[in-house]
Image 1 (cartoon, one colour):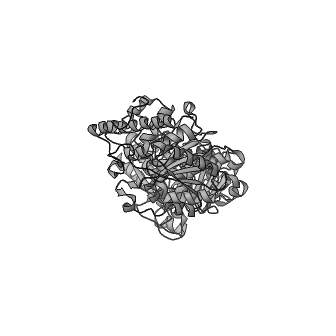
Image 2: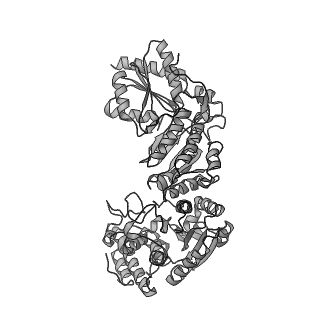
Image 3: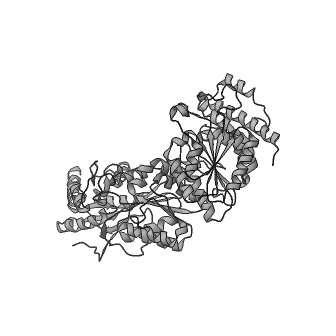
Length: 281
Length: 321
């Protein structure tokens, strides 16, 4: 278990990785990745029981995680690498030809840590529910974690999975929803207003918690609280408020940075705000 | 007279149901999911005997495909069941990303394929599903011909590691292949040897091809009838072996002429052994309501259509040689 200052140092390095990885190939999605940094660091360093040195697709007797909004792959890759799933040096291959670090995560290249391909939105929750059912059939008491984005709530399949999970009492799953209020075309409230997501998820039969996704202590506390709600017949959803582009002042809350990589000058301005704590790849 | 005979007619979907139940007994890792068509898919016996391994997902096929993909993570072998239309076109991207590209060991089992679904009409009569599924890298595509072969195929795909599309149908048709046969994925079966024309048939069209062979024989034409139950991977060696002898081909399938078995055969022949070929298939149109027999006749998938295709391709062979 790392201390909070240590976790914050990891977050700073992960954010450096995100802007460097996307800038190097002039593509990728830095905004949502920066916003979800605390979540991924908390999950992989404090919350999940994982086995980085011996990755196994079936994930029996360990916690498993599914990323549904696959475009935030830079933050996931960085955290997986620093956590020991694969060499940190491999981050330099992101989005390049012959890389295991595809633009969107895939099992096809056998990158340790990845159990499902994602990128086409709205599919991850269904897969996670299936994996949670498999854990129940196996008598495996570990949990299934997921991350969805708020824009994904516009996909109908999400609500099919929500209905099923409640009806089938899938109570070993802890989902998180990245509420940054932004999608490619602009604010979610302008593209397609999502309404009251807390009321909607509760109406679908889920336990709903709320967290401040950029406060790592709060993220950890809420995930631990969520664990206390498992095993009681209901799936758990954490509505996690984040700021897109968090940590880089000119990116924060600007939808341009959903899917735009920083140029060389912007990269230097970004790195000046993010301390190098673990060494750049 | 047809060289094959039968004592009863049964639907291929029931072969799937019996096979699935047997798998339930044999393999504790087999699980099944259905989208509100348990009776139609004949999955009720499995659901009743193994309720803890059966998941009713409701009318939510996209979610069913995702859940099936997830169940493989943990070692299970999921069999999904719904109509062919809802097993493919409706959920193509879910199959593409969560199953095929993710390399998941899911068995997509699809009933009521093609025109023989009958009276429900074109909304449900998918004629594009073989094409959709064979285009996905790594997907195995199987279309068995009768009750016994469907049962055997159901047992076989559980042993195959990788995604499979198993296509079967609604109507009761002759049961003419052996009970408890061994089903070898990707291996064509020669039903009748002949020298004048190769007829490659899949699914419901195999029985019709056997009927056609008997009529052709009476006309003095020696037809070879080969069952291609696995459209992908295609048994290219069996095709070449037959075509080198007969030098002309008829394909027969309950599918659009684009994307089906005929197109796959034409592809390999065009590359290796260009050969005159005729296609007994639906002529790029949707179906309509009617009885299965009426529809097969109207859309050119009946015994006389195979006979005339064989005669036509033989005459082309004469001219082109």
